[in-house]
Length: 83
Image (cartoon, rainbow, N blue to C red; front, top):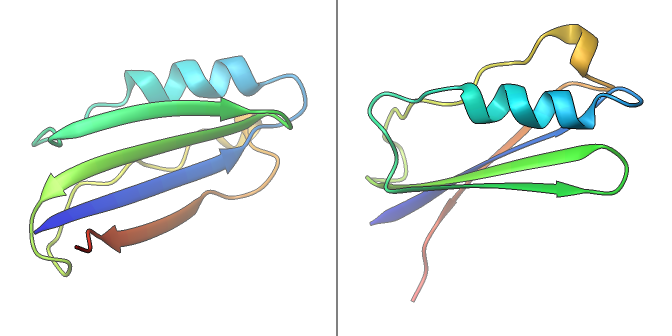
């Protein structure tokens, strides 16, 4: 089964590039099958990781960034692949 974890944060004004740099430097162990980083207007940063695991599996997740980088707390979602 494929599970996707989504991590999304809105950076504090003018801190989007720093937040993106911070999140790219965060390692996950073990590493996911795939990991992608996205940015959007409004200083938003999104990370999606893909795992070969059951939906309920304990998987490493990205941490909360330093508070100075954030406009609001991180949002997290978990999805499973469907046919």
